[in-house]
Amino acid sequence: MSTQFDVKNPKTMAFILMLGAFLGLFGETALNMALSNIMEEFSVTAATAQWLTTGYLLVLAILVPISALLMKWFTTRQLVVGGLLISMLGALFAAMSLNFGMLLLGRIIQAMGTGILLPVMLNVVLLIFPVHKRGIVMGLMGLVITLGPALGPTLSGVIISTLGWSYIFWISAAFYVLLTLAAAAKIVNVSEITKPSIDVTSIVLSTIGFGGLIYALATMAEVSFSSPQVWGPLAVGLISLFLFGRRQTRMDEPMVNLSVFKYPMFSLGTAIMFLSILIILATGILLPLYLKGALLFSAAAAGLMLLPGNAVNVILSPIVGSLFDKFGARYFVISGFVLVIIGNLGFLTVLSSTTPAWQIIVSFMVLFFGLTMVTMPAQTNGLNQLPRELYADGSAAMNTLNQVAGAAGTAISITLFTIGQNGYLVDFPDAAQPDVLATGVRYSFYFITGISVVGLICALFVKKPSEVEAKGKAPAAVKKTATARR
Image 1 (tube, rainbow, N blue to C red):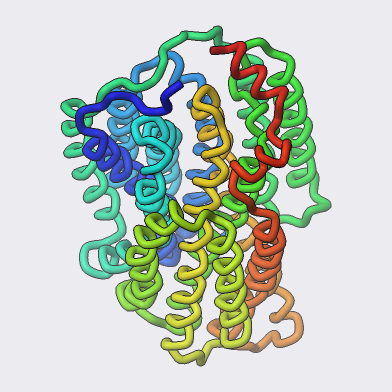
Image 2 (cartoon, rainbow, N blue to C red):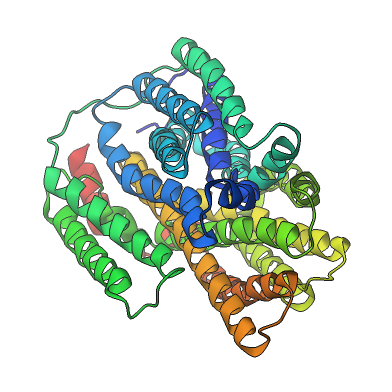
């Protein structure tokens, strides 16, 4: 069966979807540079302010699994236009916020729209472009996935310094309006509307599962792990996720077909993406705090310091995409994680309250050089192993875990940041605030470096899907299922 739909303007469709996803992913970290301003304006702590990022990612993690079901109930145009309109309403609500609660609610509404757009983008790209042309397109999509959250602090830093943090949302809302008009005119339906039965139990279990897990991780920044406020939601979340997974494997029409994880390269690609997104989001919230709080740069200057690393991502993504079709994923992913480790070691060795700016810039460039070589090849290599029938389920599963990774990275890094600061204050109670903050950030980078090493180990097992199938490792049971569903 062909994996490509006959679409007159596939590039236009892909562009609209990628720009919409970029705005949503930009929104993940756009407020990171403004956290200190928001903390002061609304009188909240760093642990509370980080919910503006963690809460956004929490909503994505809850909603993205449901997207696989939505794509079987609604047309592509309905989902894209609906997602853009919801995102626009959330941005407008946040722009007009009078208190922290109102701002957080606006962020949650905006995240709901992004949660619809992300998996639709990935699924549509897989359907409208043939396998032999996916490399360059997935390279551009990899650029969106990494550049959106990475560029958030850079662009928002300039906006905050010149206009104020609320204009992050006013500008986003304007783009959402333009994209909605374009989507209504150019997006066509490429999904198969089957309208399967809606299993409310699955929706409830996935919502409680991902919600409990991320809430527990984020709460650790304020209370100890031994507190019922942490282990209670964590236990409930893990049990709910177990029951959700068990239920999906026993249903004739599961909300998310977990048989995608029987494909070894998809599972490995998803794990590598999980680790990569965790690193991106953890770095994305720590560096703005460090640059503004320890090195005392303005929001604009701090944002511009991150620009060279983002430029590396922009330049390298299409190149990696075009070379992927020729060389495959293995060498890119291994080399990429080596560079990621080098970049993190750079941060570990230089972070202090007196670090020269160029050392931060170089380490960030090396880090993103490596991440750009990892994300697109790992994602594309994994998805290429799936049959067309499982594209929607595969994209939903991968995107869900990406959002969990982002929320976990944000929550754990802020938790370790807080622990590192408190430990330093015990030893040096009279230490200056920049020294305390720099120590907290450096403490978090031990965790990020460890994650990078795990990623390198995973990269050593990456192969082309065709090589796995040639050796008889393709999941025959899944092939049989896909054939039956056909």
